[in-house]
Image (tube, rainbow, N blue to C red; front, side):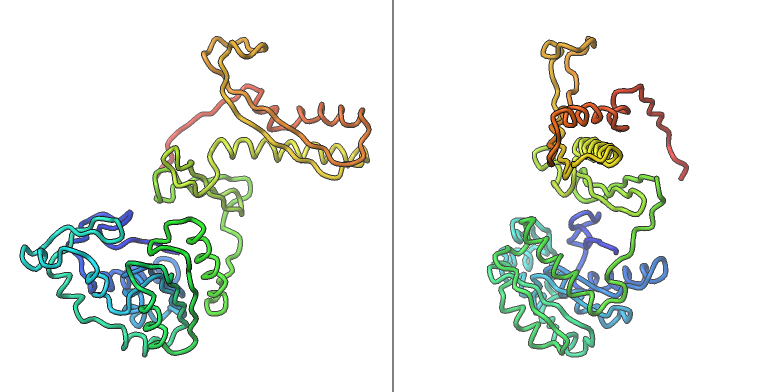
Length: 345
């Protein structure tokens, strides 16, 4: 998958004012060609708002694409600009800063001229690809009527999904997740290999790489598994994944439960289920009776363990003792060296 923002938007550098609809369409075609030559030709095209209109306009020039999805996209690209202020100033001064959906953009006269009168009739009539139109009836930037016009102009196979009660930007996480889950299910009918196989990781190897979304979001690849790490919104993150300390607690909890399960099976104990709830906090040394460190604050991890099953009191006590033999627990209590070096490019 390749995700990118148009010039001057989101994570992309440059000035949005230097672009127009035609250049956005050209960028899409160039991105598809990059995927084709460097990785794999794209089979699914997805665009939001004006990006969805650009995807529809570019689809004919991307023959590998078998399906197209739009989210809150206008039938006439210039329609979005009719709902913003500053058009008179743009025409008079050549450019102006305008507000679109609560975000500020600088737009030049050439953008208005390029997008004026553009319609998607021809592109939709000759699309010859599966189409999914997603739109919210509560969209105040691009009205729902645009979705109806896109849907009516397209040939089958075509589908529509109402994103009610989402706003134009799908700013609520649950709305974005709903759209993504439906898109993934729909794409399986049209895109070869839409259900991905295991990530190409190496067993026993962990790689953490920034996603470039927000300040702290990261992909964590552990062997064939892919996870996501992030920080809570209160700490400046997107809250799109598990925090680093939560990963640490999860590792301790999983290892504790595994250790207890292995012991119970070896001793034939009627242990039905283990639940481990690790909690992390920082304490002043004065609050810690067992601390020898002179540091002002120390880390404290408490484990709450629930053992389900008809266990004798002696067995429950033994299992609590075995919990301390968990390998991750021993690692956290042992001497740890963490040498760090730069990798060669």
